[in-house]
Length: 379
Image 1 (spheres, rainbow, N blue to C red):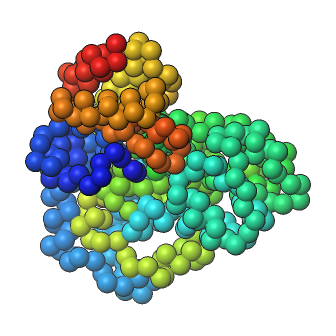
Image 2: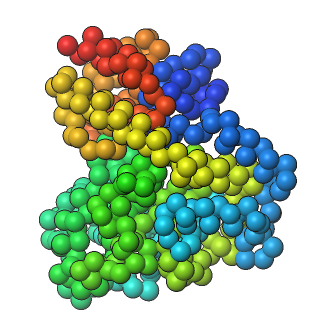
Image 3: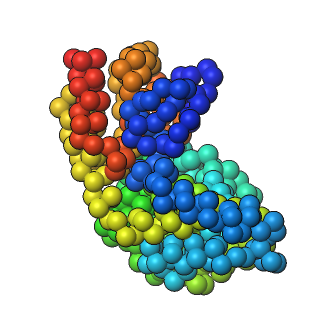
């Protein structure tokens, strides 16, 4: 995610509501640690214990001798959290879209990709070697104009926009695809899992469709799939795909991430396991986050900014032009508040965007401090 810094900043503490950057403590409204777990002492201790017991990692793929009890426990805990039969855990969330598209390849004739889909989704689409077309961002009408009868489509988009925080209008896409025979609608839900839905199961749960995803019954003939990461709200690291036994087993066989990639590192698996446990046992974190989001979005609207009332904690706002946003970023930083200006990323326009990221551990006073600075600078 490109920012205005010519030289990348150095983070010198775990990300949290206050984070040490380049030797300075800032109020931190950036990143993706939405539930504030990456510096939690329990998560850190679990990672240290896993490293001591299992070493760095099993140093082979999971199809041979690369499984460990720790990796299986992560998958079981994830399956419990997501209320699915099982899950597949692997080393990188960036690879999650690659895993899914390989698993559904035999049921796809053409791929349709949202023009603002994450880089990893666009790369994954090309892996299939099938016709690819881009449709306008979050526009089911644009998609409909590109579909061809007789071709089984795979449609790929973000569940939650990483830069803007907009949530995909999935029902619009289901309505369009339902009239085109067999179809698959896939969400990269990296910014939705842990955050959206009553239980934090993500965008499909937010829309009341979670039981249909990743091996559940199709909706109007449309198969629903998703992938996610443990590296953001869930406090760990690595890709995660929950689902039915049949769905997940097919992914493992089709993608070769099970038999061809090194198993996830033990300390990261230990952190992931503890993060999942905490999120499941402490739903109040999610409620604190939602209250923070409600407060902040409401006050931004009072300031006259074009902000929706969506519950996502990453809030991208176009404020006048690139020069104004860069100036705003610099002035906030002078006040020891970090809120990045993103010059270019998937989902941003030519002017870029100011991106504010909230976490459950931001106090009302911290949010008020940011809002006070914004009022001073914008009004």
